[in-house]
Length: 284
Image (cartoon, rainbow, N blue to C red; front, side, top):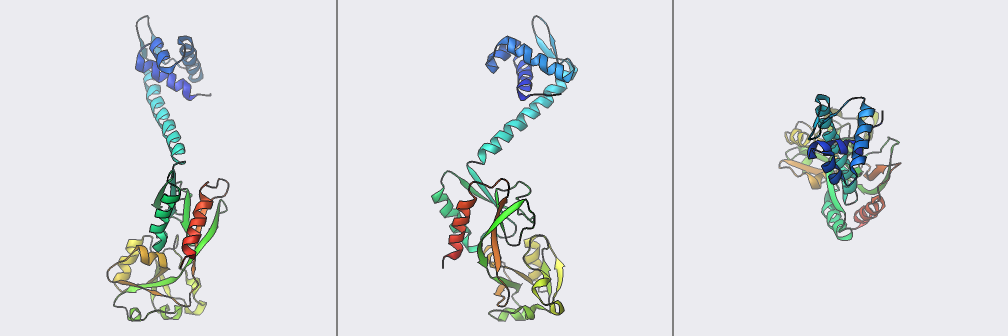
């Protein structure tokens, strides 16, 4: 059974206008074309949809239900077209915890100046692909390797790793810390999107860990002094919290910042974003 959108439009037009003649005028076709289209729809559904008299056209009981569904299908189709068209004028860049840290304002301003016809939207989605797999964004900023082969990515910059702790933590009096200084603490990590794993430490010197999934909960727990955290430096720029301080971890490998996209459907703006972000991260 094949049903076409034009058949549903025809049915709705007949019901709305009340006659085949007025429906034909609304659709810009002949009255005979309206009759043939409706007949084809009734044949496909194997049901009578309309009662026709010399004076009026009214839906049958089944026709009333079909018309209601037809309106929803047509509305969804219109929304699909709107979303597809909006993609040409909107660029959604997803991120999990932090966007681009201190580079975020410059990215937004320089993109607007260079691409005035494409609106940039930053979208926070706390998922491993920062909303890419969910369809919430067109490109995604990621800070951990992407193992899903459906996606491709490019490194656009590097960020230092920072230890995050309560302001009254003894380590906070230092300008920087080492990985070994954190061994005796409990580290709060996000296993889905975070950049910190026990593998950063030698097997015999790994700190205890607890899991979280939200940056606000993470900061709240750290501010109590019962837990510490470690994150890319972008987090320090985006999330300043009273009672929480950030200190560089001087012997930890930096975090690679990646831009990711669908491998079989790369976004047209991907290369332009890569070039802009690479330039921002390379700038002094």
